Figure 1 (cartoon, rainbow, N blue to C red):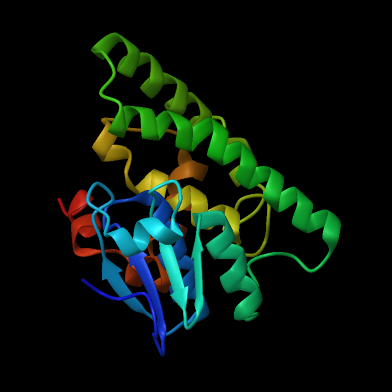
Figure 2 (figure 1 turned 90 degrees about the horizontal axis):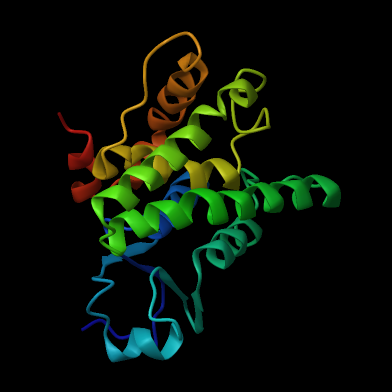
Length: 212
């Protein structure tokens, strides 16, 4: 067991297949943060992690004497702790818009994905959930035609939340059609998936999702 106390360097306790952990790893790679990534099992957490993660969830970040949980808090903490490159806009209104986009992804995308992965729905329910998520992703195509990243010219925390879900679509049996309408979505995925911060953020298990 790895102790959380008396650490002299930053460590991220991360589930190698969890999209919430993955988004934090993307931020760390984009920032060039030197940190120990400690693979952990979300279903078998140590008592030390449970003490600092009251909802028994990963990821957990330990930065010397600071222990933090919740992926959104971790991402913003890292963005403030390591300002360059910025992943949130400078201006308050723009920052608020980014946070609203993230909130929407959390409610609309992550809720569906988590239910498909974790709750073992009936096939009828799963089919409905997949159709819902697929529709939302395809509905993003028009937005992605305007800017290289989600509603922005710059890579942001929104993209860090979207990318892990898009990468995991094969896990939930969603295949997007390839046509003129979906071209912006595929171009966006190609743009994100080839970024060094994304490539370097992948665990070995995550690489296998799209290894074929």
